[in-house]
Length: 481
Length: 159
Image 1 (tube, chains in turn brown, green):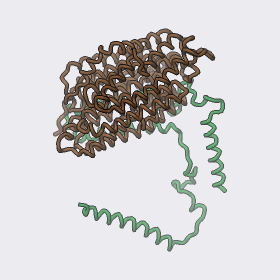
Image 2 (cartoon, one colour; image 1 turned 30 degrees about the horizontal axis):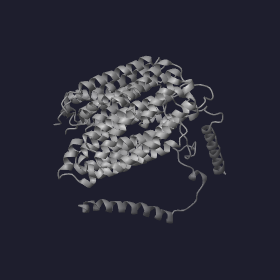
Image 3 (cartoon, chains in turn yellow, green; image 1 turned 135 degrees about the horizontal axis):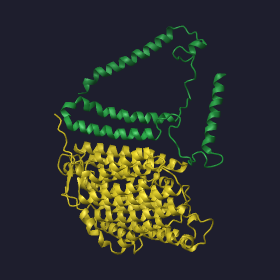
Image 4 (cartoon, chains in turn purple, green; image 1 turned 120 degrees about the vertical axis):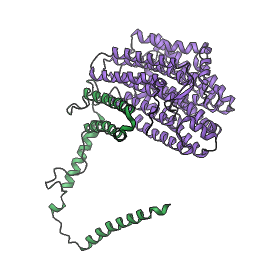
């Protein structure tokens, strides 16, 4: 007799909202292939609101696991899901504006966005390595298609590269799951933690498994030896898709890394920390240095996101609550800034044939003062310059790394920030101090400017009064198992 | 424990030896009188239409292959469920109905998106410029080069 598993669907209600919305949007896009996309965008926002509401409803639940230990119900997942829904809303709006401007009907965009978000919301709650793998695949497959959505050669090439390298990384992830299973005879995060602290588990095998998992997940957040795809894909993908995936993927995968590294392999933290420090230092240095050499803003932001991934990872050397809260704060401030930055780039680049070379930004302060000001705020936050959230985020992350005794890593991080400040400020100088050349192709519509003011305000408010969310994030950082 | 595999190894060795020996012996004793008919590839008794090499297929076959995979996976899940239908009971029935429903959504989308029409298999939007980025499209040029090279090879082969 096979026992039917207990089906506690309420535990994954946010995920179900997103997938359900995605299915409806997919069916509708099949039947209304040439229809206006406004209803699709509104429906997507409604699905995101429903998912966010059901995530909030889970906030006061007892921390536990559900669905036979496959997903966890805790505040970390709730905070991450809320952040993902917010990023998704901006992605949906930016995509709507991008496709509407060129009258380019691709209503599948909304279905794919919801599917990707569903995978991400599942990833942040995953309490089993198999679910981690499943969620990573769901979000990746949706992102591959979204990258190629405009049918142009650049995006198609980017999607192909992303797909081939992503498939390679999935193999590493799966191999890591297999090794972890070999070490502990379980794939559950909780079970792994128990087996590795007791006498049952095999430590060397678990170490190999953990490192392979870091490779697989590190690919998705573009840590340095696995970052090769990032510049090509971020540059080739349509700007709203880049904005969405650069922020949302990092939030989802880093939260999954918190669970995998701090909980499942928590007892190996001292053995894993040096490897994490090396990856983090490599990402910070290489990302910052290579960004200096770029002549295209999207490509520069792609390399900068490699460096940002290194900064976030540096908090992982401290398996304390502060480390998790610091990583969450960094993820939120980075997401707001990067969504905004790619959003502004989308408006400046002038339509589906995106022109994002530096010459487009020359003298932008004269022609488009609002866009130039918005982009400056986002770049200052990414650079980590005081009254913005990026500064507080860097302080928190470096504080966590210092308290774990990794001050050389913090030193490298500080130096990389200085190098980073150079290329961010260069774009601001280009916009403010140079004479404009050529025709102005920037988008004149006012609504996207208003929408992009929201992340800008977020970045500044979080920079001045980080206390509004830090206590919440510290609560989310308590992982009880 | 490994000794249990000995019969399998012996069997493998015998199989390889038999194959090699048959080829060697027939090579040594058979008469060698080739003619064009004997050398031509066999195609159900007809004259072969094309030579079996360098053949290019329409990319549309990929759509067919992917559609096949959707339903192939469905069958993989249906089989174990059917075998254990009684034990799984109502729960299994509902879950399986739900699963088939999800696959059906994909099917409806593919049908509406024109994935089942051979003539316009995957529609590209009117302003898609996969072939018009530059006046002399490098991809088309590569295609032409390839076609020319294949034609040359064909001519050389016929001689």
